[in-house]
Length: 207
Image 1 (cartoon, rainbow, N blue to C red):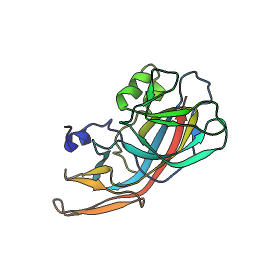
Image 2: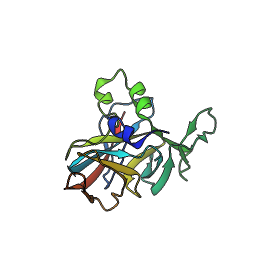
Image 3: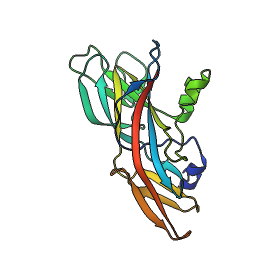
Image 4: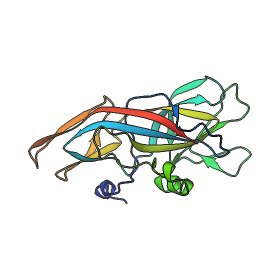
């Protein structure tokens, strides 16, 4: 299996956190490809070198909205390991939803870092939005990407302890719960406090 320590050295590791924010468009240009929704995190890091999703974590909780109306569903679970067949297509998705007023079912999938880079390899501005590790304090960092059709991802909820933190001393904390918007411990190795505070999340759409 993939080691937790190794995940911290992968600066493109996918992470997710926090409080909620409405979706805002990054581009109004029309595209025939499915739009990609990116979750960004901002937090204050004290004696923390990196914040990372655990390698085994694949389940996330999001809010979604019908792409053609105001109908919304809150706290929907999406699992990157699920492969749900799409009617009338050979493809699969991680999440399929039927809104009552929609003609077709909506779909959503979590994009891996590799898939994201391949999708936007010829668009340098969008490649810069590739999900990666949070290593800088108080700076918005893209941490998770969703590709969707027929729905908008409007919020990301932080639940459980799917995350880990690496202190500047190298000590790893593998059960970081940010559901209250902050987390703190004491690093006995370095004799200093370690904390992650003022956690915020916003969701923007790339097209």
